[in-house]
Image (cartoon, rainbow, N blue to C red; front, side, top):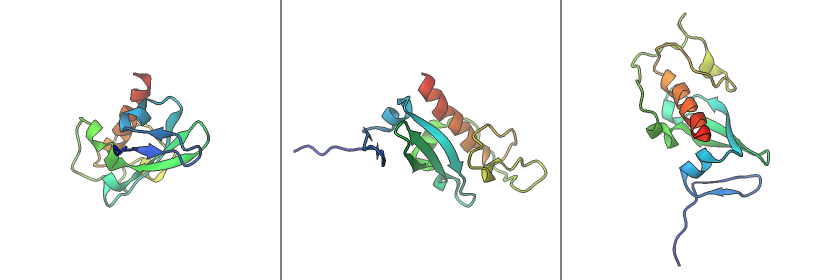
Length: 117
């Protein structure tokens, strides 16, 4: 009997996405929040909501390979340049600060654009 793999299963309705791309292209799933882990950025969480109303989290590192842009070395958190976006779970916009954390916000845009493709 072949082994089947599921990338993610909806905790609300048991819908399954066999591959990450299936989840990302599903118009019934949208990213609704980002919880930063400022100690280890790839361990932050993206929160997705399915059309059934359920919300589930997936670590940033599950998507980091999709980002191909610049990654800045300097952390600007807490400086006058910082807009504080990483502390606001529902703030999913691009951060204009050239900060080590900015790539994750760009990654959110990559994820959202996959729905439009």
